[in-house]
Amino acid sequence: MTNNSEIKYFEGFNSPNQMKLQSGQELGPITIAYETFGKLNDSKDNAVLVCHALTGDAHVSGENGWWDFLIGPNKAIDTNKNFVICSNAIGGCKGSTGPSSKDPKTGKPYGLNFPVITIGDMVQAQKALIDELGIAQLKMVLGGSMGGMQAMEWSIMYPKRVKA
Image 1 (tube, rainbow, N blue to C red):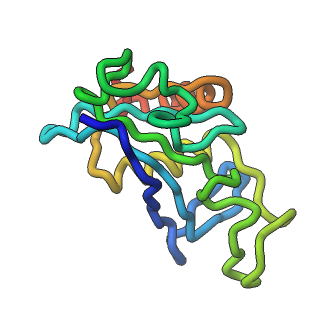
Image 2 (image 1 turned 90 degrees about the horizontal axis):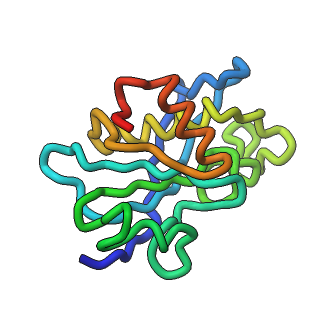
């Protein structure tokens, strides 16, 4: 199996169903850029979510992937057996909704008007993506640095949705 992937996009939280942020503000619509590696099995129990660090992106594996030594065919997280998902965090600059995105109210980039995003907000957006993919429970959630904080937040916010 190859480890090639391409950026995909999930669109969610369209008006009037905007995402309620932990700050109390609402945000939407939201775009989440993500990559997948491997194949989701029929029982959908082999999904692994990898969360990136502050300056990372969804390209976790393959040529120039930031964790290519760890994720791929016949590696520690084997994409011959696991379906690996890595999404760009909201609030960033790598394809998911962030300050450079167009504010639907003004038609211009949010810029400094973009709301404060918490780790919990990032996880809530990831959960919407996981729901869209039809995955009831993740085999594992992992990440380093800010990604590690997201993995811990998954276990707090959605403990029944994560095995490890």
